[in-house]
Amino acid sequence: GQLEETWHSRADGHGTDPSSDPIDVAVFEQGNQPMGKNRLAAIIAAAAAIVVVIIGLVVITDDDDDASDVADDVPETEDGAPAEDTATTSTTSTTTTTQQPEPDWSFDITYIDVDAADTVASNEDFAWVVGGAEGKLSTIDLATNTVVSTADLPAGSQQAWYAFGSVWIGNDDGSLARFDPDAGEIIATIEVGDGRPGWLEADSDSVWHVNGGDAVRIDPASNTVVARIPVADLGGGIHFNADGVFVRDLAGTVHRIDPATDTVAASVPTPSGALTMIAGPGAVWAPGGDSGLVFRIDSATDTIVSEIDVSAAVGTPVTLVGSHTAGDTVFVRYAKACEEGFCTDGIARIDPLTDEV
Image (cartoon, rainbow, N blue to C red; front, top):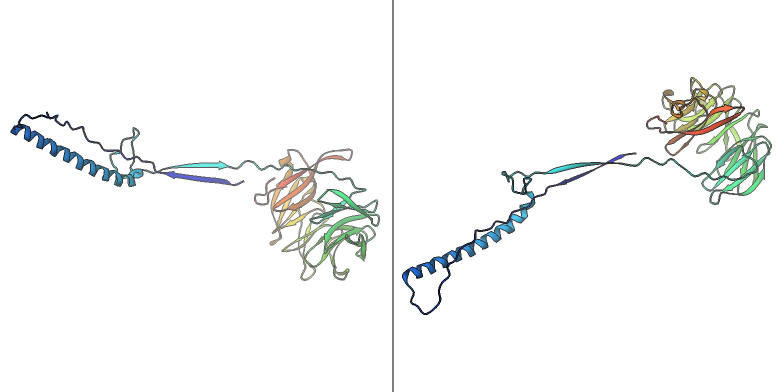
């Protein structure tokens, strides 16, 4: 989270109300008795004093109006009296630092029953779940989290991806099926390889599919293979960003394909790992399998720039088995405490700004 600093600055001052000492005015006897010189002089003196007091009050009132304009700038001592040097303005600043609460990483899980499930594809409105062994495709309405239709697929369907208004499905028989959700049926079958389907993904004009050791490029306008790029004996994950199309092989090497030439432009071996990886802006994230490390590759320079230790963050050795990006976050799936084929799974969330779990 970010820290917000709020600065408050205020100068407080109070003017003082000047006052005059009380003036004693003589009380004069009233009557018909004659007035002497001394008494007349006293009356004149008293009248003059009254005039002086009135003039003084007028001047003081005018000074008060002027003083009120600058009263807030007059500093005070602790007892409220004006400071000796009234020409200096005292300003007190205080700093308040407010730390935002820790983010809440919790989320809700909704369980949806389908006929069979091996892999999933989605857009903003629907998800399509492929059940490979049974050859089933279930369509889920994401607004209601309910299965709204099912369709038959070839047995052994392995991968799925939504692009160009269709669900593309890789099959064990070496074909790529194109399913039209609106029609509810397969509208094209494309022969792509030797029957070892890997990942699927699409960029702005092509569908990319790993089959065996090749990266296969399909034109969705014609439903034909337009390029076949050899990358390894057996490829797995395929993803792309602005720097190219990336394929990872069984040995853990990440190959960058230049889509302008349909050739491998660079290959980056990782110390450990297998088929899975994910590409994001400026980087490829390659999980290191049993090592518990995630290798971050700078996709512009084709170099490993950091290693993120998920095992250390979890607190026990883990095996990394999958990866995904969402927004500005990288998610890595891990398994630990595997006994008799059953493992305890979890998801590590990596901040790409700090390379920390």
